[in-house]
Image 1 (cartoon, rainbow, N blue to C red):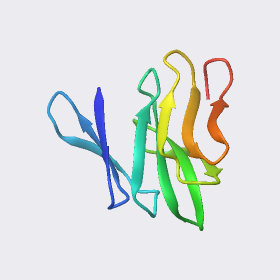
Image 2: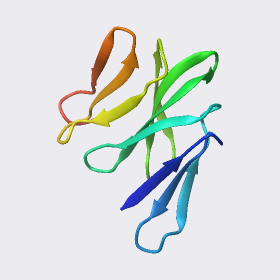
Image 3: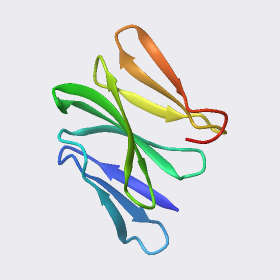
Image 4: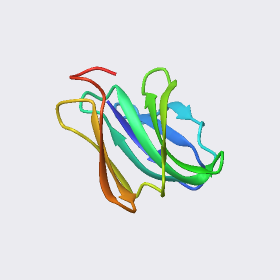
Length: 110
């Protein structure tokens, strides 16, 4: 089990909760990490960051164990909150000028 930290240094650190050692550092972002959310099974982590990655706001999804970034979603504004569905790989984020956005990734797999 992991806990994640992210901040203005644009890094996401994944800490093992058994021994409190940083097991992985995700460094794909070029701006401050605004928010983080683990998928229901802890396999993926979603992060929202500001308008520094190629001049766009983005929502990024990475595999927790490997640190591989698997998907990047451009957003019109900085995502202010990101949350996974408790049973599926469905993602909601707020911060879009038109309201809350929902993203679905199949029935239960990415």
